[in-house]
Amino acid sequence: MNISIYNTMDRKIEPFIPLHGKSVGMYCCGPTVYNYAHIGNLRTYIFEDLLHRILTYAGYDLKHVMNVTDVGHLSDDGDEGEDKMERRSRESGMSVYDIAQMYTAAFFEDTDALNIITPDVACRATEHIDQMIALIKRLEENGHTYISGGNVYFSIDTFPEYGRLAKLNLDQLQSGARIEVDENKKNPKDFVLWFTKSKFENHAMMWDSPWGSGYPGWHIECSAMSMHYLGESFDIHCGGIDHVNVHHTNEIAQSEAATGKNWVKYWVHGEFLINETGKMSKSKGEFLTLSLLKEKGYEPLDYRYFCLGGHYRSQLVFSWKSLDAAKNGRKNLMKAVSGLPFDTSRTVESITDEDSLSYLEQFKDHISVDLHIPQALALLWTLVKDSTVSDEDKAVLIRDMDRIFALDLTVKQPEGDESDIPQEIHDLVEQRVQAKKDKNYPLADEVRAIVESKGYLIKDTKDGPIVSKKL
Ligand code: AMP
Ligand code: ZN
Image (cartoon, rainbow, N blue to C red):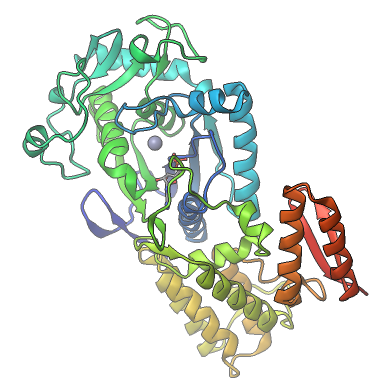
């Protein structure tokens, strides 16, 4: 199967030709672990998971690397504001290390629940400070840095190709700069590689370096860790679309200035999940988490199904109504496939029927050209409803397709599963969750009794309450 993918660098869909035959290196910018991931962040990891699955489906030997940012990410990507981890530590009274540990664990719980394959390497910034220092030294030796106000900066004027990915017009930027100019910077677009002094002096996490005790800037971690695990040039770099202008632009500058080589062949960016009022942002504090969705009676795979319905390069608008539609859609899909004979050991290679083979070919066409997952999902529905295809072929085809969708389509659903529970019961369960939050335990008990009187049971788990029908 030949893959093609939209490369942000060239703004067009290009055939995917890896640098080293069947081996593919892919780096994805990971979470900053100062808070829970919001469902917008999770949309990006779902899209990256789809790309991961498509590459392995196509037979590539993939090495997928993702960083975990546990130091150095300021509240503004362009060096303004304060370190997100430090701020959270001050607000919560927890140490930065405990915060990092807690939210890293929460992140992987969410991604597991969404059937997102854990990257082959998930590397923490704090465990790769040596690699970052070595890279900054290389940049220093090549004349790309300067020290000002105690910090080490990357000088973009020493890298004429700066802004290639974002198609930045640097002259325009200079004159119309809207950013608050850091007086230490020679050019407003220069960025910090290593902080020692200035307003960030009292940082909790500090490391010795040739420039004094301090900590790394955010961008350097991705260059240092990706090259450490994937080499100085690799195939794919992913992230959310917001990273094009600053983060990835700076990553390219420092990586290529250090090595003198082209760093990444394909840049793949996922569009944002937005809500009806606009952007969903973690730093603004207005965000929905997977746990909240679960509290409201949705399963993580309802959210995955919802995301599969939108192409990764289009914005996806979140609303409860559309999540309800996804939940129903998935429920109907699970029902429709539940009687199929998934237990055979047959694979798609054994299919001989022309119509069945045509489904397989169409599926491959959809997923191989720029991740057309919504079309692939529509095709799955057509197949499910097609009475001319035998149940045996359907089962084999659907099992194969689910290698990409990862909706657990072949997993037998428990009898009387949660999706059969009426809305009235979900509302009561939600009311009880709220009563418990308000520490109104008499009300919580009363609501539980009402639920039981209507023939349902509530079981409290660490992921929230589970409701089932009384036997
Ligand atoms: P962060 O943890 O803030 O560094 O973000 C993790 C990933 O989520 C990055 O790839 C971001 O580009 C991406 N991201 C942030 N907000 C959204 C959103 N609303 N929709 C989709 N992806 C997002
Ligand atoms: Zn990054």
